[in-house]
Picture (cartoon, rainbow, N blue to C red):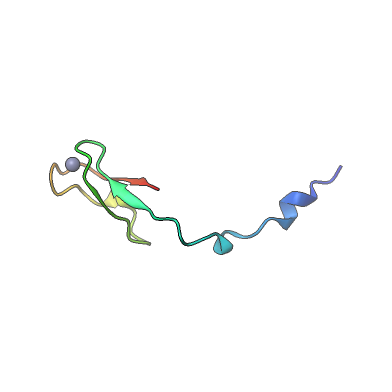
Length: 56
Ligand SMILES: [Zn+2]
């Protein structure tokens, strides 16, 4: 049986934009707004210099 549903699924471009995403420090809990195009793990926590992680 052909898997038609997989062909019909939308491309990633169409996914909703209204998901608030934040970067969070796993060490101290510092949070900041995630900037699109700038991965959280390239940023550092100003408090403890730990690399941030993304959290939606
Ligand atoms: Zn921190």
